[in-house]
Image 1 (cartoon, rainbow, N blue to C red):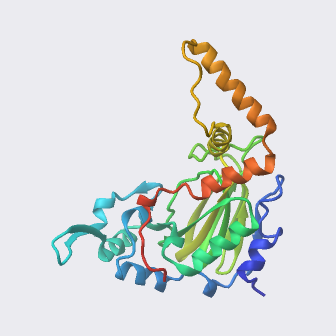
Image 2 (cartoon, rainbow, N blue to C red):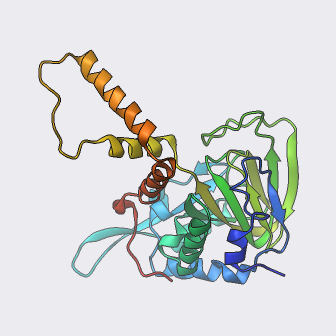
Image 3 (cartoon, helix red, strand yellow):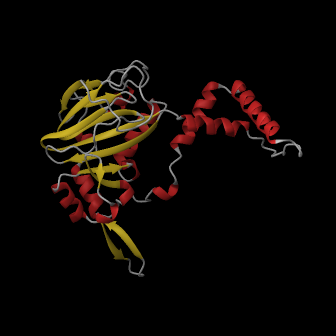
Length: 295
């Protein structure tokens, strides 16, 4: 029997993010595809012009179609020019074997927005949703690793996944430099199947037997950059008092380093982590978001 998303998000047997020794987890039939974004939702968003190039990409073997090749120019009633995603161009790219990749789906799809909130409430991570609609026998991305934990929900068709051993030390960065010797595991996800991949696990997916669509939630813990930024916030002098003039560069740098070390030593770990996570969750520039009614 499928789980509700609240049950799924809270289950350590489905999402192993809290376990540093977690291995890939696969749960057959754990989700009901009807609870998630659908092909009809995507078609409606395209028809209503809710999607812009940052939200929609076409990829094949990690090669992207330039955004300018997916849009058409138009003008508003007052003469202002704008670019919109052309559904016919998207359809042609799909027919040519390109995967439709949707980014930040929660910015316009209400159910996905709620699901992002549920995952974030259960896990100390920045959560981002992506949709991959892949033509039959095609592969959108080359074998790669993500700098995040990954939760995959198969929604339409079947997808064959190949997983590679990350090695003795998991890489913290994303990338295509994957050792393709001896895949760790090969499996096929059917509609309703759910898979969790720990941080940095190399993988690749291919649609088999027809078109295939899956929803991915990436879950990123605070990055070193976010932790440093949070430390700098805590170390900043709210009074803005300048250092005494006439000091040399070495003395100024030494004092700054001492201040940071002293701040780090006295900073509560939970507060530091929470502050960094909050910064990361709200770090998307407003200019990259399209303000539109949620569907």
